[in-house]
Length: 400
Image 1 (cartoon, rainbow, N blue to C red):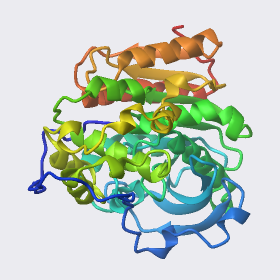
Image 2 (tube, one colour):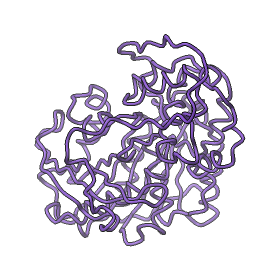
Image 3 (cartoon, rainbow, N blue to C red):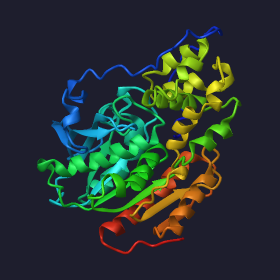
Image 4 (cartoon, rainbow, N blue to C red):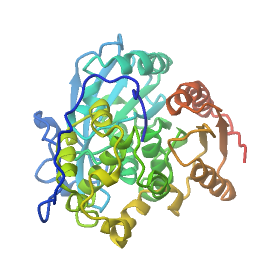
């Protein structure tokens, strides 16, 4: 999860909602289907193996990425309960990319609940934040000859908060990119990188890789500002009003989409909660932040029974990396701010200590700024330098 653009608000979402009892058995709300049939799953999706390419599409040039070839890849992946899903990734390839050259899977921060929030769509909106913040860094890597894959790691239902799902989709996106013959990346060394929500997907991919995709030739992963324990985040938020409450609400909606039988959040909402949920159902970062700003769970809950429900707690624990027993078998570069008030920093420390004790080469770098997003910018050059050294075959350093 991330707090980008808290100070940049492009409008307001009405919150004129009457408090009252919610209807019985309120069903989860899912995003509006993508109008482009390319993004839909084929009827025989279950017959395909994880990471198998379902379709590719050459795409037009992207504003801010001059001379870069673009290919959209649809592939089969797996959801959090083991079911087959279709997912997508956008592959950026420079003209100087050599066959078998470096492949970076970059998990972008996606704070969204609607299909329009997918990276594959945002790339074509001339989003000023992407152009200003991301394009310069990504272009610098592309012109080194690296190919960059940008998966839509929230999945077809935009299950924001479902961190394990992001890891599975990331791994299958790498498989698919390497399986697509026109990309000529079958023998490429692979690295991963992501911050905040993108760091969640990257961290989970690193922890799941040895079990789920052991055949991948991974050289390392760089992760920053990762919420590694959702239980602690929820407990930290409690019942207080918070400027970024919208992100917590979005995570509840997203997790219910992924685990509808275990986490019936909608059933615990009052009328105001359902109205807020409906207004956010297809929203991206700014919509979500504005809709929930300054609110608390007490404003929208009809029942607090989920707080003590074993199934609901299992969902949150299942998506908390600190509690996962898998260990990465690749080197890690990890960066964060010890003053970050948005995420539980002790969960990061405990997780990295656990990895170190298991023999994983971990290099941790701290940036003492209280701002979550500033830390992302400060750490990115160090993360890129670390990945570049792994692609060159240099031994991974460790601060364990």
